[in-house]
Image 1: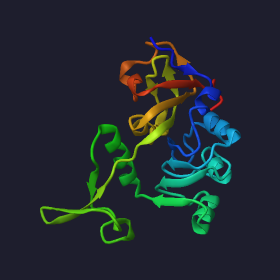
Image 2: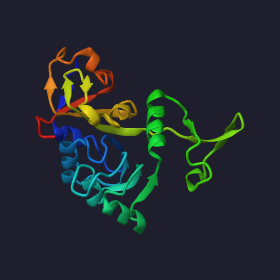
Image 3: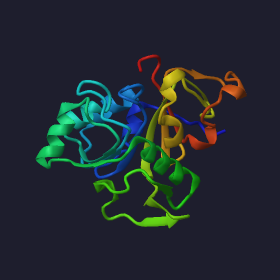
Length: 220
């Protein structure tokens, strides 16, 4: 069995300037805090960040925004981080706002190998600008293309050494779909356990999707 356990330093060494990264979480619940703090310390820059939101300035991926490490943001909500709004309005950061359901389905489409998804959300608004509009049974839909990343950084409450992941309650959020839609997937584990210690019925992301595990040792 491949040893998937790596250090946080090894994890951040995989992230380079200009990469596209996905980071799980929902208003900071739950970003991979340990890995993100290490990315802030490393100072990697010009990132394209795909996330539901940018948390808060002092929490999780909000720190990447404050530290001006993100060149482009693809997210559904930015209102809780004033620095995101400031950089967006000043032109310092390119922001693509995507309706939350559409964001989820675009990521899911990448994970499933689909060419995109059709949605009526955004028809007749600026969201539709420059996009293909397809008519089915007399109704118009936008063709929204898949979102895929070079690396996905997710969080698990309990992760076994094969990478099988169990999330705690609402921390499941975007982590499950992001685990399917990146070339490399790193899970930050609150707790690492032996194979077999997670009931198969409790596995929410199978280990086949996970390349590496960072043991946060309860720090996350």
